[in-house]
Structures are given as C-alpha cells and as structure tokens.
Length: 262
Image (cartoon, rainbow, N blue to C red):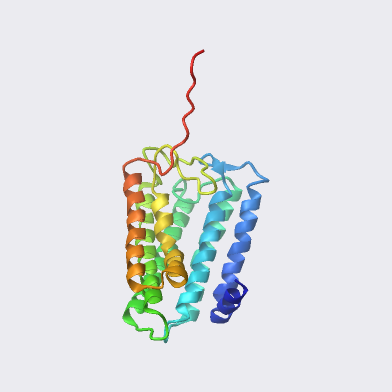
C-alpha cells in the first residue's frame, strides 16, 4: 500500500493531494453525522457530502493512476478541470448540508435552480472529459502494459461514463426513487431505499467499475478473456439493478416483523 501511494504521488502529485484532501473531507463529514441531527429527506444531512467527497477521492486517485500511461496527454488541464468542477460540487453540497437544505433537485428559488444546473453541468463536463480519456485508451496501444489490464481500464471507463450519464435519469425526474419521493431507508451509509426502487444503486455500481475492474484484472484475473467476461457480467449486474429500480423494487427490503395474537 505504501508503495502504491508513493507511485501515485510520483505519477500525479496534483491529483494525489486533491484526492487526499477529499478523503480528509469525507472523514470530517462522516464525523459530523455523529454531532448533528440535521436531516434532509429523513437522513442525516452530512451523509451526502460524505459520499460525494469519498467518491471524488476514489475517482481522482484512479484517474491519476491511469492518465499516467497516456502519451502526449495534457494532464495539467485535466487535473484542474477535475479539481474545479468536482470541488464546486463538494463545496456546494456541504454548504447546503450545513443549512439542512437540498443541493440536488432544489428548484425552490432561481439561485438554487441555477446552482443545481451548474452541478449538472460540472458532472457532465467531467464525464465527457473522462470519456475522452477512455477514447485515448482505445485509440492507443500500450505495449509496456498487459493487454488484460488495458482492457480493464477501457471497459471500466466505459461503464463509468455510461452510468454517470444515468444520473440524468434521476435529475430529469427530480427524484432518485421509483414508487416514492426521494426515499431514504438509512441503509448503512448509502441510504438506499428498502421500500421502493432506487436509481442510485445502478449509478453507484456502474460508476465504480472505474476502480473495481482494473483492480480485479491486474491483481487476480490476469487474462484478457476473463477480464472481458467479468466486465460484461459486472455491466449486467449494474443494468439489472437499474431494471429492478425502474420496476419500483428495492435492492434490499426492510425486514417485516409479524405480530401474532396470543
């Protein structure tokens, strides 16, 4: 692990420190859940900034690692695009959490509506930039890298882009639930619904293919065929959770307690 961190810092010091900052912020946000009862949609308001900060941490470190392989890539422009765009999202989400107000789906005033649109634009630009990185991985050969690892990066980025854009399905509806209104069942930290369909599940599973597939391929699979097969299966799981949510079914259901008359 120490060797990985040292290499990562060498590969991209800017995104290394940005990711580290996001990790620290995520720990601050999750700690705040223990010291405040402020809620948004029936869950502690600080869970959302925690999730976004931690997700940005994993994204920043993953892309810092992968982009190092790209020849003639303007890494400085990519770095600062990620920092500014995703940094804006984290700051705004945290600010709204501190006030117990919505960040996403908030059209209650022209200012909040504009800021919500700006968050959507920021996420779109980062996704498109990541798609461009994926294109470069498809368009270049990497003789110094194992083919299975390159394919894992290609497919991981592809699934990330696809399920990142799936976020528009939630944004256009102003609702991440199917069969309810932005239901949160306080399932661990994720808050996924236990009563209705939750579109956030597929969003989460698909986007984190970016980290999961290259890790599995490089450390365990070590085969191009196995990598492609596992990537297809992983994509099918993400699609299955989307299908399940669209049909109003939760990933996990709440336990039902029966009461017998004595």
